[in-house]
Structure formats: C-alpha cells, structure tokens
Image (cartoon, rainbow, N blue to C red; front, top):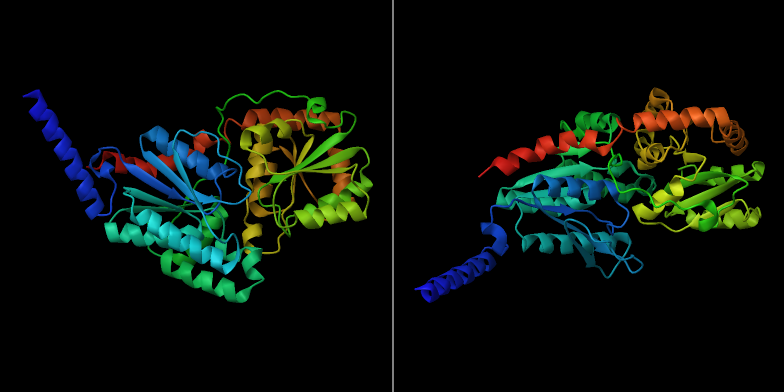
Length: 406
C-alpha cells in the first residue's frame, strides 16, 4: 500500500508539472505561497530602493523573484534573502538595448507564474502590464522619478515623445502606484488622474553594524576635511562639475566622488586640467555595505542637483538619507523636497548658488566644529523617524490584502 501511495503522489506531481507547462505557469502555481515578480532595468547591485522593497515583501511572506540585467562589467551579487535573476543582453545602451530588454522581459515573465507584478519605472511597465491584464493579476508600479522628464530625454525630443506616448497609454487607470515624494505624486495625479502612495527611499534603521575602518586603512587623508559626493547617477546638471571646481578654492579639504554616471569622464578631465588630483579622488560604485564605510568618515555630504528640469526640481535623492543615517551634515541645493528635509530636520545647509567659490565658502563655514556637532546630533535623533521601517507601512498596506486572498 505505501508503494501505491508513493506512486500516486509521483504521478500527481508529474501531472501538475505538465499542466504548468501547458498553461505557461510555474509548477508552484499550486503552492499557497503568493509570488511576486519584481522587475527593474538595472543590474541590481546598488539599487537600494528595489532591494528594500523585495526584502519587505519577503518578510511579509511573499516568494519574491527580482529580475534585472547583467552588464559586462557588473560585479557579482551578494547573497540575498529572496531570489534574483539577471538577463544578459547583446546591447547595453541605445534604442536596441531598450527594445531587446522589453522583449526579453516579456518572455521571461510569460513563462513564470506571479500573483503580483511589480514594475520599477516606465522602462519595465509595458511587459508587466500586458501580463497582468492577460492573467488578471495585480500590478504595482513604482515610479522612482518622472521618467519622461529626465535630461537624457528632454534633450532628445523624438525619444521623449515616444516615451510620453507609452506613459499616457500605461499609467492612467493604475490603482496601485508608488513614487518617491509628495511633489512627484502630485505631478502624476494632475496628469494621469492616479493617486500614488508616497514611499520615500530611506535606509533601514536596523541594519548590520558598519565595519569600522579608519581613514588610514582606506588611504584617506587624516589632516583634511572630507567632502563626499556619492550616487549611481552622477550625471549632468547634478552639481558635480561645480563641486570639482570648488576644490580649487578649498585646499584644506578633499572631494571624494564615489559612484557612477555619465559625467564622470568629464569630471576626471576637469580634475586633470586644473591639476586637482590631490584634492579630488574617484572611487567606482560600491556595494551598499562598503559604501557605508566611506560615508560615515565624511565631514559633509553633497547633493547639488540643479533646477534645470521638472524631474530634478522635484527630486529627493537617496543620498540625503544615507548621509543622515551616517551622521554626516548635508550641503544641498535649493530644491523643494530637498530643502524641506534639510530645514525641517536641521541636518545641514542650503547652498546659496552653484557658483564654485560660493560652494567653497559654504563648505568652509560648515567645517566649524560646533556646527558639525549640532548637525550630527540632529541626524542621530531624526534618523529614527526618517527610516524605511516608517515608510514601508504604505507598502504593506497595498500588498497585505493579497496575502489574505484565496
């Protein structure tokens, strides 16, 4: 009798696999665990927002699969609590890259079962929305920025027009949408009559302790102030050029630029032309755990985006909250959401302008020890409010009903 039962169980399992193939779904379709597939176009390495979202969903009880792409120079991923998959594409930029990514993502999603599809930014929304409609499943859209208003598109009207047409087709009618701050949420509501939840990209309060390393161990000077500019999008019009130029007037400091972006090559040329190699240092993007080691050693953290387009005007860069959690005073540009954080919580100063001399003078004033102590004390106090554990309440509110559904 036990042999017969085992045989029946084996036959049943095989039958379920066959049905899964027929209906283009995973054999886990018949599992009570709810499955979430999260899509993003980057290589997953430094995207803190998507990582925190996936971690929250995993902790809620979802079986999470995060899919992105793997570039030729992408470092390996550290182990995560949820599953990941990175697609290798023939093209890495331009029209052919975006077309190939959409096609590959569509087929990837087609052959996998999901109870909820999570699309990060407009460049992943189309395949996710198609599959969610076909299968009558929940879709969640997380807009990290106003995608169609980034400088890379505003300077290319034809491409911008195509993306705007896609946005007008896909965004209206979305019931479950997130974005990064109140200003961008209001922008989407005005144009597409949607009501995004605000989910600011803040660090987790409870994380593993930072590995304590000294400046000496990292090869950083001990006799000069450290000004830090970090980020995965150090691009044009984000104040990096002016920050480099300011170092010509600030011999008592060193500017540490950690990350990547389309303006890095230009910055290196500027440094060489002005012979500022002893005052500006570049470090390629780092995993979050390693980046935190450097961040905590800085005297001032920079976020100097310019008000040159709607996307930057309403931006609230992640680095601001990274600086706060590391206890680093912030020098920020005069933008709506950024200024609100800096002034409300008294964690730094607003730059009067982007003039390099003015930036240097403001930084020199910020090096004052009494001001440093005040700002660091404020950061230690407010980080308990400005943290992911407080923000993820809205995320859980949207996803929790799905766990209760049959």
